[in-house]
Length: 363
Ligand code: KG4
Image (tube, rainbow, N blue to C red):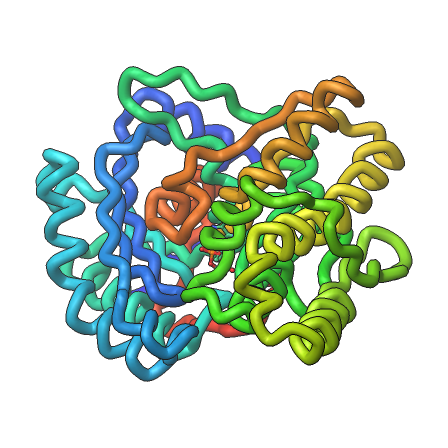
């Protein structure tokens, strides 16, 4: 079965868009890129349901164990999709297309969601839409919720996309037209924070714990090395090493050092990461003359980053878009949303399309 019909002429696409305005388009989204199994239903951009099963099995290992993540997705995917359809109040026959996260992510995890989406599309006889997880995070800014009036960014806008695996500045020209203008050359911001938390003996994931501790600490108590990277790119590996060496030296003198300075250490590492992120974001906004600024991804839940963005917005007259906490972590609502915009462009994919694990915007 092939739903890929390309290329459509601009005239045909315009015709479809006019038709879509008068009809209700229902998209089922499926997300399984890491350790959250999620399904959501969206109708013309309005969220009808969003169900997520988070995997707690990884906590005791201090990080996601890929094999265990795949197994948990296998167990969760049917009940999660079923629950999302029931909670949306729609009949599954009303689904117009199935959007799924094709990548980047853990290959085993992606395979579960991808295979399930393919099977369901075959059985329902509806097209499949592959979604780039990173673009999903960005398009989460366009999700409408019942009885809520959320402002959406206007094109072109810049999005600081920060998560456990990615740190990028993305120039968003249209729903389906995005360009990465800067990205980390080594570790991601979330990964660096998580590693520092691990060295301090805090739990997993360390990001939210550091965030909480940082609120009681002095951000200038400790100074760590800052990267000097060209353009809008980032680097966090030097900061991580600097944090490690500082702790190594100070705990030699005082074995209780970490325990006694937990809050100051957390505040200082958070401050360093946020300063690095903000410096390049401000530079990009200034150079490109863009005042529509959004943040997205797991680290966008960080209170220090949110405060720094608000401060910059006030100073530089940015229109700032900060996602709801529930859309900062992995969720299928954003996948369904991205799927909806691809549906409007009739950008369907073939059932033979495999998932991919690496970061890219080319696919
Ligand atoms: O986007 P995400 O849920 O997963 C991917 O990496 O795709 O991001 C997870 C990352 C982790 O590194 C986690 O520690 C970090 O987001 N994170 C935070 C906060 N909440 C989650 N980092 C700092 N402050 C937070 N409040």
